[in-house]
Amino acid sequence: MAISGDYPQPVTVNGFSCRNCTEVDEAKKHIDPARPKDGPYGVNAKDRPKDAHGPAVILAGRLSGADTSVPGPAPQRPARLDIFA
Image (cartoon, rainbow, N blue to C red):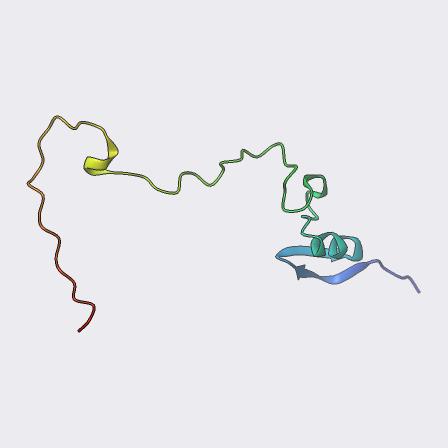
């Protein structure tokens, strides 16, 4: 009878897919079992840029700063919102 160290189906721990006890222990420490050298939360990752997700806000229109010399439509008064109604 053979004793296997692998799980019959992968389990998910902290969002990581784990196939054996070693990977489960790493995932409990927030270390990606596929990239254990990256450390917890991937703080030691060297192959990924720090700003991989892109900018939080992309300005468009008059706020983009493209060409402010062209006059746009007159600013409108903001609508009044009565929050006590």
